[in-house]
Length: 363
Image 1 (cartoon, rainbow, N blue to C red):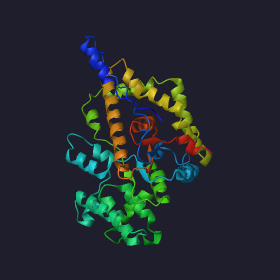
Image 2: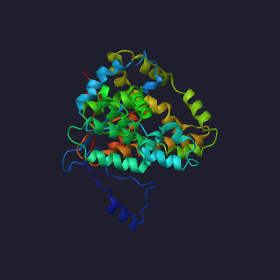
Image 3: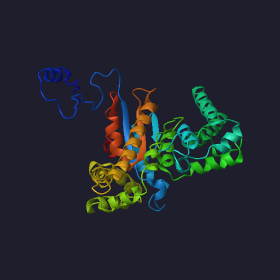
């Protein structure tokens, strides 16, 4: 556990009084890495799983049963909170309301809650308030009716993966248009449970195995405000930058998908893409390359600013989700290129401890 040291402010003041030249930039001697050595109680433990975006892969490369070994290993971590790369309903509402500031962003990353809202006769804030009130009143063994109502409320709240989780608890023969559900909503909930999105196949599945009642949506896309104000040369600049990736980085990307195709291959593939060497190559070929880009450097830095803003807010959303559960175990399911950033950001929190993913996934 790291030793914490306060910045040497007294020494700096003495140096200034003696006329010594101040440093060109400030450096803090305070080390935030790891939980505070005198933390009261147990740290909140975060396990960050960097994932491929499963829906983008051919089904033969990643069939549902290929995830079996990975899921079994993640279940041994026994998370109390599961967070996935999805945008929460209130954030989606904000981006819809300010469409001119976030052009087409909500349409790209948010599901339309309107059918569920119309069925319930509610606004989105009303549905979200009702959903959390219902969670607070939930019995130890919820009834099928309560599950159906929560599924409808979460869908109307713009929280589709929490809705899918509630729907997963409903016996198949009870998944009917009752308790505020219409046939249209039932069809949408059924589709969510067959989604190839890792938020469903990993996030909802682990949450159900653990008996949780919510899947936290922790993604952030108001950061796209930066992209919306970047020049048209941004994406050509970024694509050219990607085209200059090293042979080693390209080989890593190729190997990442070649390992998939079986339960053993998927487990090995996830261990590979989350390993430090693969993470380093990913960053060097993308965001590190943007920081060093000699051509159109300002545009590349805008891309980097978007990514860093988004990542910091995502990490903050995870901290907020665990805030009322100090000492909880938190599983974060996120795109693989976010993995090292999450580990670094969360490791700066005084009461967070980063769990070694490979130790969890290893045999």
